[in-house]
Image 1 (tube, rainbow, N blue to C red):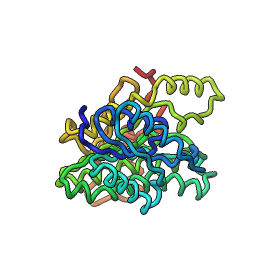
Image 2: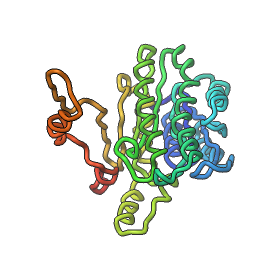
Image 3: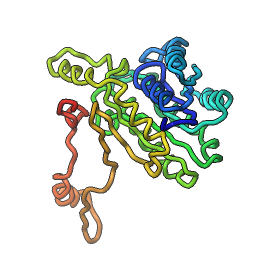
Image 4: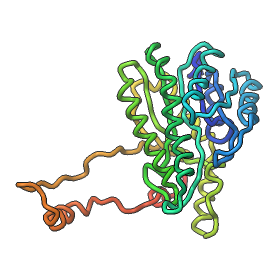
Length: 302
């Protein structure tokens, strides 16, 4: 019962990874606010059923949970999500920012609406819910944020400019929260999950390469992500903050963060011609190739 006595908000907890995390946190002793608007993968429509079903599963297993169907993409709604936790359970200790939608398109064909919708749920939603919880965490001198990032942003993927930008932005948001709230005893970390869910169920399978990729993903279930989220939310993770982790079936990954690779110096400064003649040839060996997530994680899940 590593989370005994704690209260958690898990957004997007009606299905997939969010549901697995909510169930695991309840088994670990936490009371859980199960937030989910019940929308489609593209973010359209609403349905109270998914959140209610997760709550039912928790309660039937002897846990405590309450449903909430407010949207994370709206500031006032995010405040209501946090208020639901305090009003129902009397406190708040954990925020898991998991809610998300997908609207994939090649960059030059991506609509403004699809850009704003994905940024709104992933990046704005993570900020809104985190910001709404911040005064509570600050006052009580403790709290844990767990945010979901993605290798689409950390590494890259084709046709996901909106999703990749949001997910890389979440990594930066998490680091900023960790820096700004460390003095209040508040921690903030990211998980880049590898798991089969409806969020990635629309990946095309038109070629043998795509079919092989999907087959690998289908082996990785949402419940493999939950133990890391539970740990990061617990007091056992004291001192662990500002980090980016990955979970790929049985592989637990610590991701690097941007740091200088190499510098070149020239007395008197640089001209465009000098950069072309000297600087770029000296730096080119450290250039990153134009890789996708699947190129970097090319081995079968362990």
